[in-house]
Amino acid sequence: MKKLFGITLTTLMLFALIDCLGGCLLLEPSARTEPAPVLGEVISVKVSPAQVTVVRDTRRQFTAEVTVTGNAPQTVIWSVTGNTSSQTTISQDGTLYVGRDEKSDARLTITATSTFDGTKSGTARVII
Image (tube, rainbow, N blue to C red; front, side, top):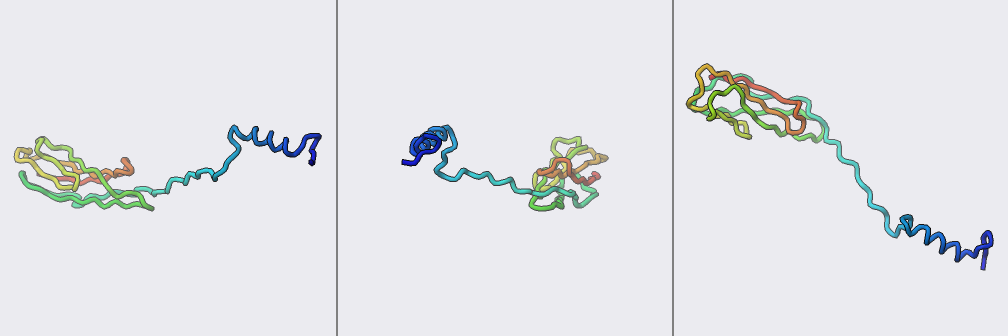
């Protein structure tokens, strides 16, 4: 039997096996974590029409054009401010409903905010 520093190779291999039982003995390749994909960024959000006059008790459709790089989502959340009527609302598809009791001199602001980057938004003005 061969010896290394006075220890038989079989004994040396046993010590190495015991020493590695705490974590260095791997029978299968370790799992690899893939890096998260780079989605890109939102460059701008533009709402159309930019300005419009609407009468009470009617609907008006708005659209958002979201310019992005890479695979950044182009979705937005819609909101309306400046309304005096709780009936004046905007749906998540961009459809504005102006309530019957909205003030005739109300000035509404329609906002489309990026769901990916909340600092990017576009607005439109609505005159009643």
